[in-house]
Image (cartoon, rainbow, N blue to C red):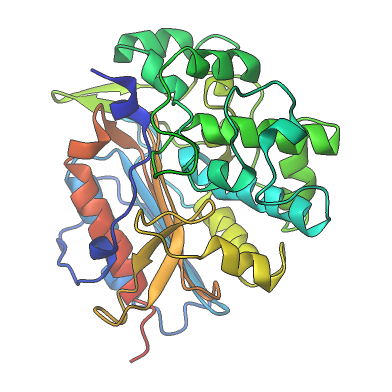
Length: 382
């Protein structure tokens, strides 16, 4: 089984977010109490039912936060740990996988705003000798570089699991990628590659004179008061984190602890659904980067991928062409969907803690997609 199939981030097609859904009204075993903060007109019962349905379908836990302007609602279903008794909480940290990428993209665009780099600048000018082909910053951001994905170098789930306990440097990951054939010529077409964001992390860290983790802390996490968000430097995760599981042939394997270095600046961040909504609001409302660069990120391409962002159709206006923006994280034991209206005012962030070995055929994704749609619909004007 290809490792790319295990962890590759799959683009969200616009059809995923444009239709309504139904979900079970039966309560889940171990259902957690919801936390409501000025929920306003958010239709919370529908969203909670969708979380319950996701757990009933096999996930150990499912948590979400919905925001509509100043109104917000957080809910959870399931358990912190399989076989335990502690109910899941929406405040618990989780590994967000590729939802890390828009955070790195935001840091890159801050550097653009500061005049320290340009979107169409060659990587060779920033990191001389790193890449053998003429790739630009923009091509890294929108996955049109053709740079091979280092994860494709692993030929089995067991191989990546064994490597995930090791400390791996970015130079090693990039070297692994460059030992593989290039997928396309730079700029010719979209081909998703986690290596793109490893290189972007190197660029940010080099220009800031620090690590990518510290750059994200200084540029993103601290300014937005994302106090539950970290860029791990080892295998540890907070004691109150939800446990993550790989689900295969009915068997659950706990994969909560693994060294984050193998995911690097493409997928390493730990966060909460509340902090994810805080990030996307701060990004889309112009707090982190100016409006012209937000618009650059939101340029619609045939791939459905912008500069670190995925796009989807707005469930409140199906068929209208109106969009939501965010990202999908197909993680090892955790999956996340986080999307918002273009201005960041209507938001849903959702994480579930049981993933199939192949995300493309994960039976839980149908229920997660339904929960995301329900969350967006819960903010639609009456």
